Image 1: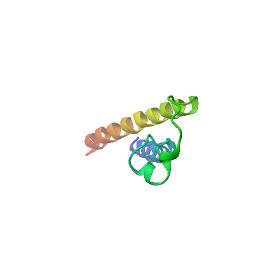
Image 2 (image 1 turned 30 degrees about the vertical axis):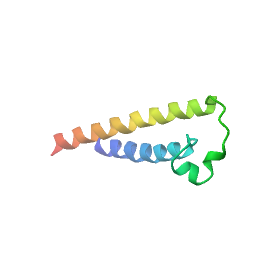
Image 3 (image 1 turned 60 degrees about the vertical axis):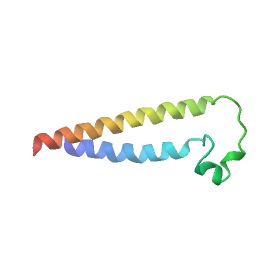
Image 4 (image 1 turned 90 degrees about the vertical axis):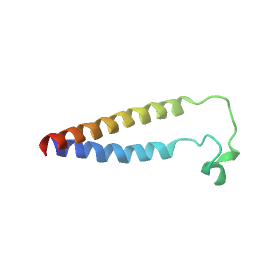
Length: 78
């Protein structure tokens, strides 16, 4: 059972990194330094951006649940 949650944690961590890197820069910070500030502000986010947000939140929930589950399982088994 612990191995299953470790695998889920590793996969969700990698997916989370990829999803966060796919997000569009919101202005300011490092994204402006590398040319991200040239984008036009259309006032709203596209359907693809909203779906990417949903995927990121869903992956974050899976990631957090796997961390809590691993912590509980390791505490009980010790």
